[in-house]
Length: 243
Image: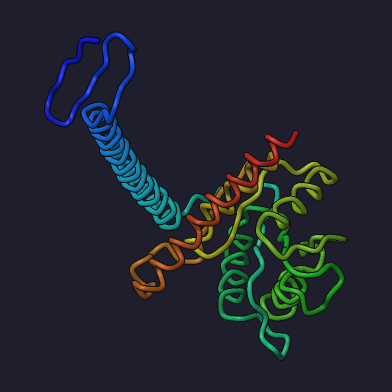
């Protein structure tokens, strides 16, 4: 039997067998380590790219939210929709709801729509945002009772629910277009949700000078609204995949 002897290696050619193949084991470990380093490099690169693209996408979305919030897009429509906001413990409109109601009345007095529609809160609750806003508009701001409408028979605790409720009422009344009144940084998501329901939407922020908003609060609102858009988009995607 002929042997080839090398340091640390012993190979039997005739029997085609290996004894203590250190060179072969070393080669496998080298290949494995090299492959793992390459895989780790790919993972780090892809993760970094995903983070960068996500940040850019979030920044672009935030820019769009602020851009729409700084624009007055009101024009003649079938109805003015005042989106719900906080109500004080004494039943009066909170600061945000108050500014929305005043702004909605300004649009009504300009003759841009014959109806002011108030949304938000539990259906039939006299202390809901919708009931409080319309009552204040009628009793304090001179809105004719016949021009004030509360979204009927629908609990609307989220903007998506408000959009669905208003769209249902619009279908019943033959409306196709609305002027949407809300906080400037809320309007991008709100308009998207209302347009998703098939309505033509003209946004009208309560304030177009976003520099008046405290910077940290403005950043927080922007991030929150961007997150809301992403969340609703993922919900839509999940619903489509479940169908």
